[in-house]
Length: 178
Image (cartoon, rainbow, N blue to C red; front, side, top):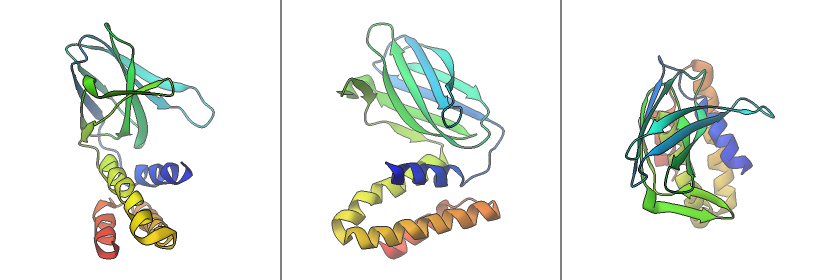
């Protein structure tokens, strides 16, 4: 979990903010209700959020973020118990799509599986890094994983210092060494 948290921190620092975000959600089969956008206000601080009406599984959040951040959308249909999905939000137009039939209940927590997020460059980078995590451990072992992980953070750090998007460099590195 520390590794994923570190990746989230590094990925969140990859891009500079634009004018604001518009998160458009479509949760097929969720019906009417509410959608709640939650983000941490900081370590040990309460969670901040926004609540909007949901019609036929569709909702829209608009606002501005100081930097990319991991968020949770709690989908609360009038006819069922809530379920959540998470992704990295940034100041750009973002589309989130999922199906209510894919709700997973595990350990008393309900989440929506199989979501698709479009428009968040930071989410794209996170998914790419998280996707190779298991492949590296399985195919090449811990030593290779440590090498890749260390160099990914060097790439992210350099791009943050230069205030330059890092997705192309990360893609090049992963394609070269994996």
